[in-house]
Image 1 (cartoon, rainbow, N blue to C red):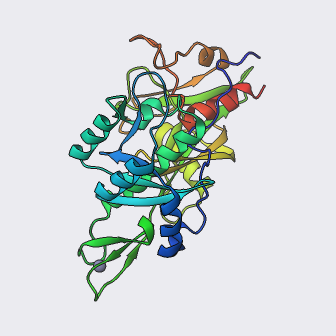
Image 2: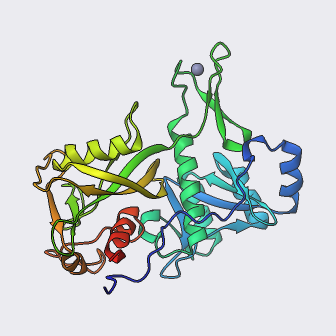
Image 3: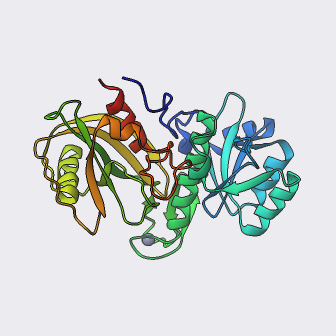
Length: 317
Ligand SMILES: [Zn+2]
């Protein structure tokens, strides 16, 4: 069967840096490498810096500019090392963000990564997602969750420690596991997949079902519970396919396929405004969300694992 899209890679998953032991590198080790060079990825209000226009490249500073931005930023995180140098994410305030754009003669802009992620080179999309996720974690953990005192960054941004000596709790970067699942049925010729839409989404977009894993449940149990809660469908054969960091703001998406054993949909109106079975022909007729007009039914965005899960099902004939 013909594919409805070009081959689709999973965005935000292609590692470009060595990340091992970043939190345990001694300051002498880091200082020696920084003297030879460093890279800086600025983040302003959760937005990443890219080359302006349609070039679709990340802006990564090196040399003197990198040192200046690292010095002037209000938070930094050592993301890892490439072959030659350490690379940092640096949180910059609005004034510094303006100076950075001026520094590049207006050739760059801070944008929401989701608008460019699927167009960037894979390693750059991953790098910007990593930077955004780590800076977001720092922005949300300025105070200790145990005693309420301020925290401060340690170990090149890989830990925050409570400044109340009687507490001194360590806080580590967190990511929230969320399951996302393409449910399909095989009782009708050619099969069909279950897609729903959230009332808050852009008009016409349908996606796979998703939800956060709760304490005390396995991933498979989370899949079955979410699908039944949102759509009233019973499932079996819950198969894991792939994961995707999703720093919007702080999730790890765990992607599954599951087979439906019941077919009558009962939606939870607080979660979904609609949910339907789509045949392959109907999926083929869905529009890219950038190309869609008001009445069109849209595919999920190309950077999402939802889209990838649909593609995997679509191609598996
Ligand atoms: Zn504390």
